[in-house]
Image (cartoon, rainbow, N blue to C red; front, side):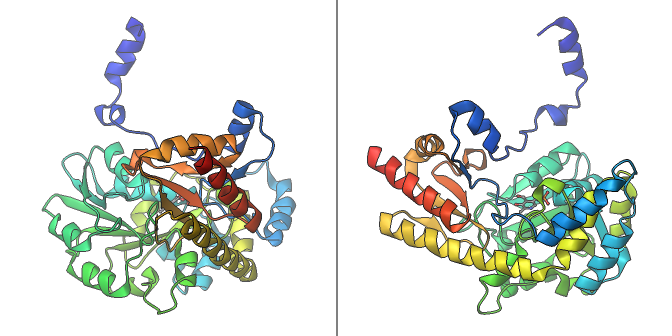
Length: 375
Ligand SMILES: Cc1ncc(COP(=O)(O)O)c(C=O)c1O
């Protein structure tokens, strides 16, 4: 390192130096460059394999003429559409550049050095990063059965706790919290501690919920003013590239999130697309049905191969490949299949596979068979 670079390094905030950056799924173009492959199935980022609703494509195309204008910084239309969809007031909403931005903003609003932020082991990677960015202490509570141990999370609360992140279902493990578990937990959290309930995969979770056990976070907003629900258009709505998500809060706290938000944080096309996507619930239904079929297809194949997995309520599944997981990941890449290794989560024996189309899922299954045979 040059002397000047060392000087810059010395000036970087210490909490930034300690951050382990978020590791995204490998892009298709990267694998194309690296291995010269043309037939690739990307099952690594829990995207919608159907793309987005055709109505969204039409709406975004029509909006292109406004490309030189700044977007509506207040996201008026999107908030209006969302408020009708959810049955909440527009003042209860904050729109973000992906829900990722909002998850981080909550930490910036409510925590700083000396505070504690609680999340679960194997919880979404953005939670520890969000705590670290603001210099707060991340408190990782050991998981039980690969999911949140809510009793232990309650026990981890101290006078320094400012914020708790919970994902339902959890990513990457796909585990689900039931209504009973959630209600018991939220009723015991002190009212001044902010709880973020991350429902990025709510549409899929509800589709698997035959017994009506899934707690829809919005049902609890009026009772718990310290609760924020986080949702996204990146998954079932198929808008991952546009980056748009939202927070819903019951009480006053949402205004502080909006206060800190960058003036034009959500671009015009994302706003137009999200409005259009919300109004095409038939597309969402189709996406959910495809996911149910794909989950069945992959689970049946895994059962035939004798491979264990963590039961999932999302659009992805963690499969247990023991100490061969990383090798198998490399071999799958050579077969043109991108899945997600989870060593950065401490889940070294697992690969997370996003549910794709029937053809993509079969590509994965066939590739896995080839790779296992060559082991
Ligand atoms: C649990 C969870 N929350 C939030 C996000 C962030 O999604 P986005 O920023 O695309 O809205 C993801 C993305 O994978 C996720 O898995």
